[in-house]
Image 1 (tube, rainbow, N blue to C red):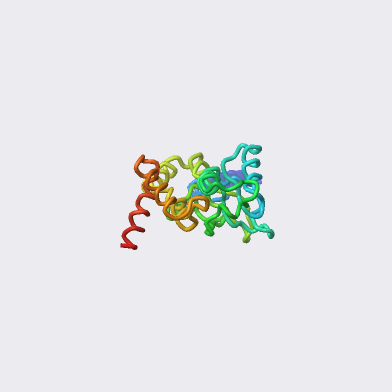
Image 2: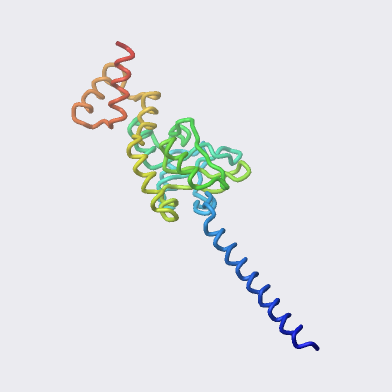
Length: 223
């Protein structure tokens, strides 16, 4: 056997091995640099509830599962919204409704914001900012696969979460609930009594900024 050929083979083999190792390192670096997608951070198998279930059952599920929000699905398993503990307070208890009689769908505002599991995390954050929400149902092939929340984003990208939190604060995140209340006025307090009630709460600083602004706009429209 030619010694020179043997040495040449070792050199070539070593070069091949080195090139292969470098390729592996480069692929690992590219993988780390890949922008995270929703499926990387979302909460899988979120606690869900049927839209026709009672609001009382929704509250019980939240207590049992130690969560502050539930994914709401229709009879076909399609997401139709997210209900939070705040929704139950603002859209149910504030209305004087019976939680045993009211349904989860009674507390929804008719809009559902969703995001695909393969969407970039930055896109989900932008969508949350635009819709003024802190949770988005994540879909895979049109079916609910999880929920991505502000807390999920915070664990993966604190800087992005801080920016989103500031944006939500500036965007008056309570505006959706205020809008809902004006579309569905207090049932147990009608006419002048409703106006007097709101006037009293406004005088004592008990209305949110979003509600006060909407009252002002309403008065301007009727003037």
